Image (tube, rainbow, N blue to C red; front, top):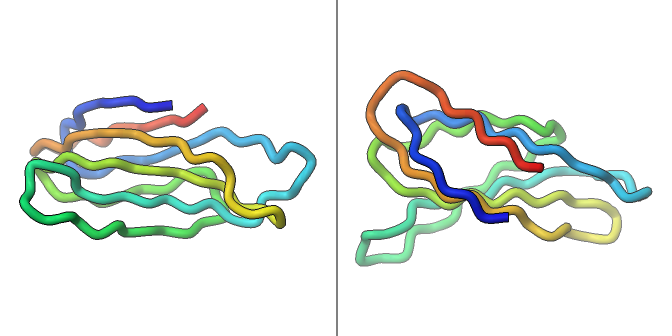
Length: 98
């Protein structure tokens, strides 16, 4: 799933739904980075959590890609990718993965 949105602020609450397919999920991982227009490749930042909600504090006026993966005893799941752009403001955008 690939979605794009523009935020009115710089913080985003990422929420996702999950199914464990009869194999217990041990961790979720969020990977995010700034994308274009830059002359250098931005490094990925990552967050590990056991919850299905996480608040990212991002920079103003930047484009980001966010990837969410689940981990179980078999390894990493297929990832879900989200593209967004932050702007100045005070509102918080909620992102829901299904």
